[in-house]
Amino acid sequence: MAAAMIVGALYNVINAGFVGSQHDTALLAAITLGTPLLGLVMGVGGMFGVGGGALVSRLLGESEQDPSRAAGIRGVTSTSFWGAVATGAALALGGLLLLDPLVSLLGADAATQDATTSYVMVMLLFVPVLAGAFCLEQLVRAEGAARQVMVALVGSAVLNVLLDALLILVLHQGAAGVALATGLSNLAVVGYFALWLHRHSEHTSLAPRWFTLAPTVLRPVLGVGSSELLQSGFLIVTSLVLNNLAAAYGDGPLAAMGVAVRIAQVPEFLVMGVTLGVLPLLAYTFGKGDRARMLAALRASALTVGAVVLVFSTTVLVLREQVFSIFSDDASLLSIGVTILTAQLVATVVNGFTGLMTSLFQATGRATSAVTMSLAQGVLFIPIVLLGDHLFGMPGIIWALTVTEILVFVVGLVMLAVSRRGIERDLADGTPERAEAVLETAG
Image 1 (cartoon, one colour):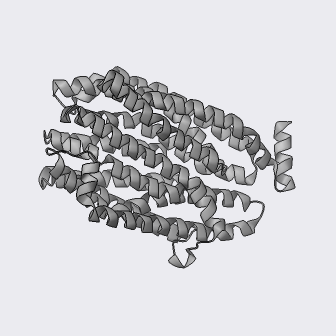
Image 2 (spheres, one colour; image 1 turned 60 degrees about the vertical axis):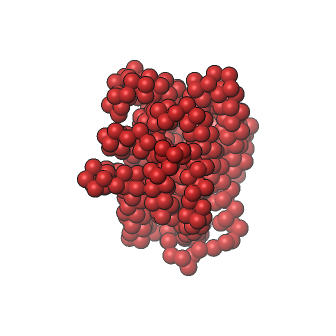
Image 3 (cartoon, one colour; image 1 turned 45 degrees about the vertical axis):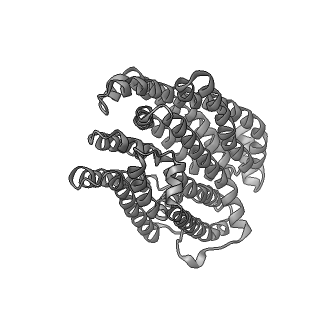
């Protein structure tokens, strides 16, 4: 999963290079302005995919003691996939009907209006596909098929790069070409995942006949998944606020922010690969009652996150000027971009551990704790960024997200302390074998 995420992050950097090669600041700014739309799609796909995937892994773990528990997996996977596609279709229709107000809300001005409209319009057409692809990624991982997910995501990134080269460099489609390349590569992902599940999965089904509105499926799926939607929702608000505040300082800072964020995503996505990749294992071991393996997975993940942050973030931080200069030779963009990149990398230090705690809450069905983590980020960021802008101007905007991430990490530690006893209790509940295993480990 980490390998797949890092390839995706590298794609984003290469994509920025393709766009930057056009020497059009408005085009770079337009892609940055469209970022909240991708966040919304990930939120929809994540709500159904993460919620459904966590439930599937728990059911697989419980089926080790009670084989009949596996029978409910088909309803979970079908409901999750078609729920994501239907919700994505509704959002796409609403966005297309309100295209002009949406582009204005994203922060586009006269200079970026046309490019942003082209990007957003094409991206909206593929929203159901993008939501379905992200949902299927979580469902396939829920069965432990990490290699298949890696193959799909790496293949998608390679295809996206090839399409970018064709649509941007050869056909000169600009912002619309970037969106079209993203949509077509994700359509290929949906086809791959659907075919793999049909051929190789014993319990999973995407057939519409298994779709259900039963509370036993919807409650755990949406309960856990709502934290992903809230988190993505606040990321959208964060992007909108940042874009609109930064736009007041000109297109240069906005374009610099877009490039810096993509560079910082390389170590950030690698860390996300670890925290997302361990979620199915945590859910499975929790459902099975295997305390020793669950704690071992947490320790290994925490050590990996720490190592990634130390090596990759430090390397990029030391070489930040050289790295940023690859994407722009504009001296003003370079100066502010290096500052933004530094702030982003500092935030990565705590963001990985925050993500690991959130995955633990989602895996163990702690919907309230997971939602609290998501709420904390949005609730804290808005006043911090507004106060930073008022007191310090652009530097206050740049460092607001870093300060927020540190505070959210503290909130996570508090939530973990509160939830720890309940997680231990639920691990010991259930079959005598589960209770005995926990007692032996504790002894």
